[in-house]
Picture (spheres, rainbow, N blue to C red):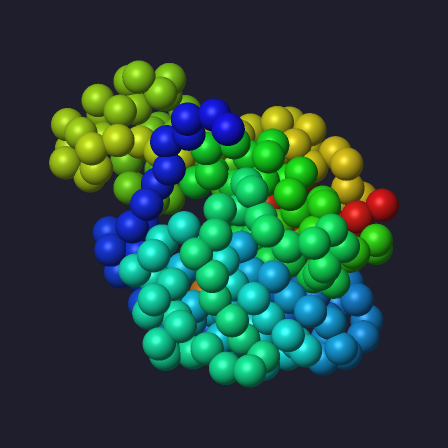
Length: 250
């Protein structure tokens, strides 16, 4: 295996991963989308949560599924999840999402929310997701865009757009981190990344129906902000900061 540089101990530097209300909002959004796309009860399905971190969101998601597994390379976060949330239907493992140990066609549903940019090789991640999904299985895929003015993790302008060698120095200069691990992709690169799957795009649908999809923290229904977002996305979808896609294994 190649000598990858991993982003370890992420939870120790991002305390928002312990924020219950924020994690709950994200979990509700995921469940709303999954219920809409499947048109069925999720209770008979098995879920894999990739990048489960502290396990708070995984615990919330697990209430809707038959069996749930969360994986992460962050040993401290997985230990916290095991101690606080593990039960007979919910288990956590320290595991590399680019080299999963599960059998092929093991899961009905996978959650991969804002994970691809933290993984050294996103192509390997997506290939692994394809392998462990059952035929017809789906993956909730939330993906940040490289073309954003303010980078979401470190709140620095244009950080994700810069060449890596510049980004490393930029992030150190402002004492945000010692190394810029994230590898964001553009809209077109993301489409190529997941091209093995059928793609169901929920990005605009969520903005059109924020109450249905528990996205009112982002945009209020019938507001000027909602109108503006939809106008911009219809004009230049490639600059959308985050895409919400359902990937279905063909």
